[in-house]
Image 1: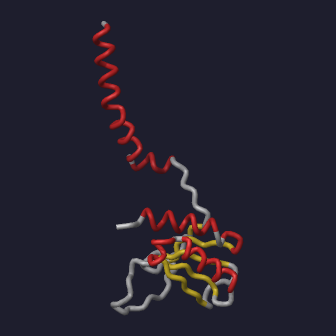
Image 2: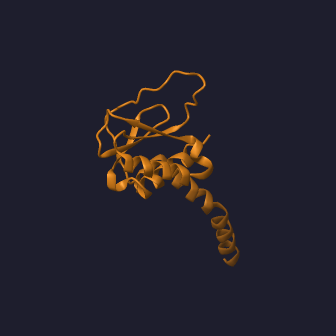
Image 3: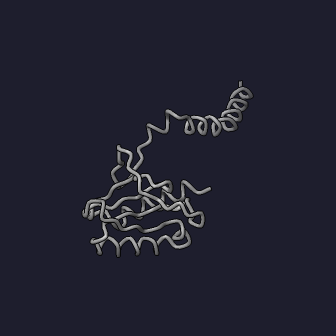
Length: 138
């Protein structure tokens, strides 16, 4: 009887990490975990026009804000500096075709992904951008 308990304990210790990993990697389980992002996901597909120059890298994330919003532009420059070695993966674009009170993170293909109000430009945008860059590295 004692040998069966020891054998069961050894088997449980050996295989339980694999069972837990399988459960966590299952597609349906990932929806149960809460993902925290600070920006608002955009439901409509809006694209930023990109240059077709072959010398431009197309794996760069873009931070887009209104041209007249100097406060947001300064914050975005500071966010880019705070990224450190990953700052070459981010580009800042100013445009007059977007609302003055919004700032956006766009995918490398130009699709607008997350929208931020002026109060969220700073640490919340930085955290989301850092997470996006880390999770999408090749």
